Image 1 (tube, rainbow, N blue to C red):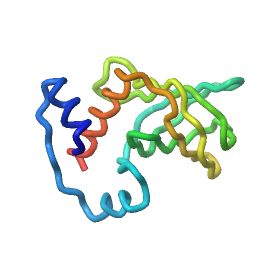
Image 2 (tube, rainbow, N blue to C red):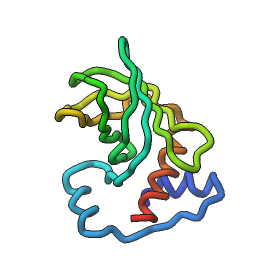
Image 3 (cartoon, rainbow, N blue to C red):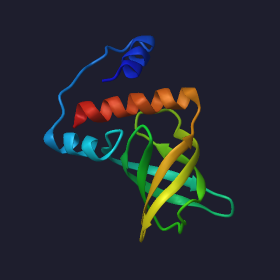
Image 4 (tube, rainbow, N blue to C red):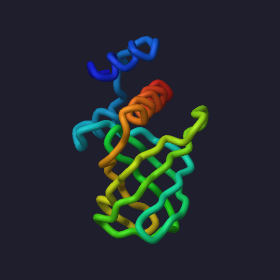
Length: 132
């Protein structure tokens, strides 16, 4: 856990935990700046002239992978709400940019998220890391 997560955890009254990574997660860190965690969260998406639903397949501090019938193009920007079980309100990503597409699956990079939502996201990621 990096210093930002420890600082947030201490602010939120949660113990800062340092955990070892499995070999799969270490390989993911070699390819990406931030580790991604498997997820199965319902998602709501809206863009300039479209809106729809999807399923978040994995998530990190900087983005996520979504499966959806919504047709999106690389470079498009979307507002994304991720419905995480246990949260009173969906996690709100004010702006996410489509980085790649592959049929019904696409990758989003979070480009605008409020400080409060960023803290919630990091708590969700901490929980996913403990479950892995």
